[in-house]
Image (cartoon, rainbow, N blue to C red):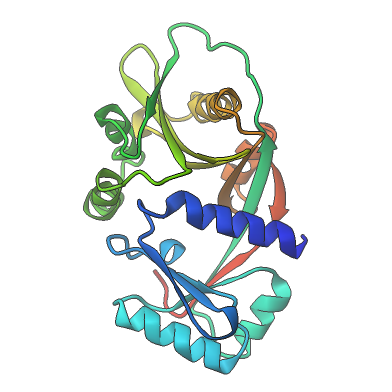
Length: 256
């Protein structure tokens, strides 16, 4: 992993989600930053980066606690993670895979599958019916309703970023969804979900391929995403043509 790759994808990630799932980024000493969400408490959306020194750690911790969040830190690699471990004992560590694929045309979906594209910052109701039922675990669904849905509904358009929400229907109704955020030749892929009652039918792969094709049609050359490292989700994306460019680590002071 090169530093330019990490910084490019990190900045693109923050740019894609700002005004939606992310509400802002604060700047601290020596280039330290803290990205935060007003609505969503998860450490994946409330984290500091560029932290390696005690003063930076103290600043980031104070900002997080001031926003009612437990401090969390994004380390670009194992070396930066080791520097953070010298500052505190982590309660939880989450290795991630930041992946990139070429935007490209993909084969037409077989009937009765079809994908609808919705342009705009806020996803349509059909998207919500998938996203809010991506799990059959009621606490997970309650978390999505309470925290993520308000942020998605309040998302606002921003100059230079085009938001595109995809909904795949399988003949019985909305079955899978995804969001693309495009700026220039790069598109971020988020919210890839399949309804719990439609899973294990290959629809996750279908909506991912549809997203690559949509990004290509809208002028993107590359598509990036983030996922947990080393599991079935990463393998699904690898089969779709994504390759890992960076392997950052989210390090938390408390267990979510």
